[in-house]
Length: 110
Length: 117
Image (cartoon, rainbow over all chains, first blue to last red):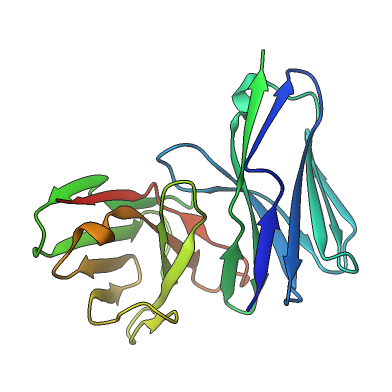
């Protein structure tokens, strides 16, 4: 069965630095990969999607890379702010189904 | 646009009772809706895929007789947890895919916190 791992359960960084989150997967060849933000007690909010034939995607302070050879996606938040503190989930998609990683809890320290 | 609501936002019930959770797409029609369950500090686990007008497709290990899903209209899907037990306590989240949209699109509801005493 497919397995999705996200680096360290929790990540703390200083405000203004770049946060880098990792999503690794096995036993799967997703057509695309998504990143979501989830705040405590709330549903996930879609951030970015990257397709299997794309290497990099950007949106404002967010950047996602997708390496299908390494089976890895990196999610970067540049110039991080305390408001970026949340749990970030990666999700693999193929066909009609999604599989979510366990999430990384990011805390940006003022 | 693309707002999904859930009701109730939280519910506390006694063991053995049934609980119904509603998922509504407020400003779009959704042929397909998904139901997820999330335990503390864990990721979302897909329980079932609900298609309007047909039977839901359940993931392996999810009891369809315990988690009844009804998708009677293009804007409403319901999940009924029958004879709830404390181990069913969890955060239940639905998502909705706009009809005719790309297969990757889904919009999540705010979730329902269920506590079974």
